[in-house]
Length: 143
Image (cartoon, rainbow, N blue to C red; front, side):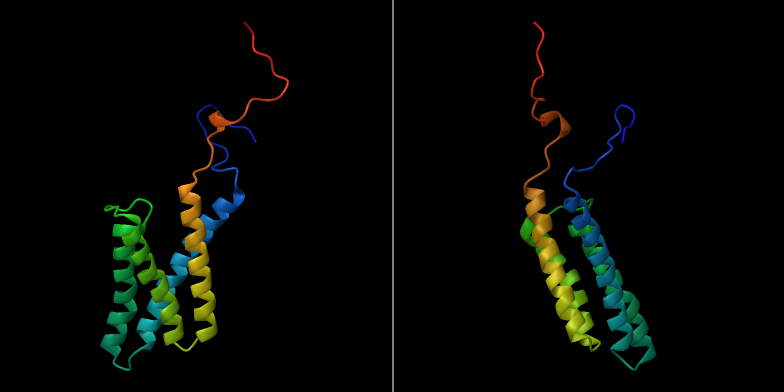
């Protein structure tokens, strides 16, 4: 693949990094759906169902966008970010359990923990930039 000057062709040579980031985004969306599902299923009162079905994922989105999103307005230290991620993503898994899907809840919890751990490991070890690559063997420098 080639591109013009100044255009990044590959975000990261580690394709698994990009795949993990995509998985993280999908898990976030699934958590919001699960929270909404739980909210609509938790009560027989129609008004409460609507409030919880809309309000729970909305609250999760506000928390996420404020503290845990890559472009969050407030960027606290890692422990608080992980608490917010645990509340939102773990809340999605708990919501699955709450609607009577324990196996799916366990699977989601395992995926959330694994994905978050791998993402944090990757963030601590940023990918090498193309300018930091080793010189090609056999190349000569002119004097």
